[in-house]
Amino acid sequence: MNAEPRWLNPEQAQTWLALWSVFEWLPTRLEAQLKRDSGINLHDYYALAQISMAPEKTLTMTKLAASCDMSPPRGSRT
Image (cartoon, rainbow, N blue to C red; front, side):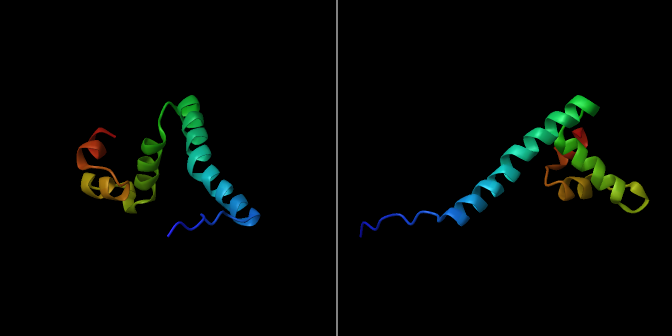
């Protein structure tokens, strides 16, 4: 069973490239700007954003780590 691969049509290819840009290009550019403007990386910014949106602007380290999809030790370092 050696079926030819089904390639993307032009519309699908355009959508795929746009999605790839969001996943690859955007985070890299955001991180560069954050480091340039504030000296922090994208993960740190996300953690700060989570804290700023939390009730009373506080989170336990466990909740912060979980909301940022990081390990508790990494959450503590952040």
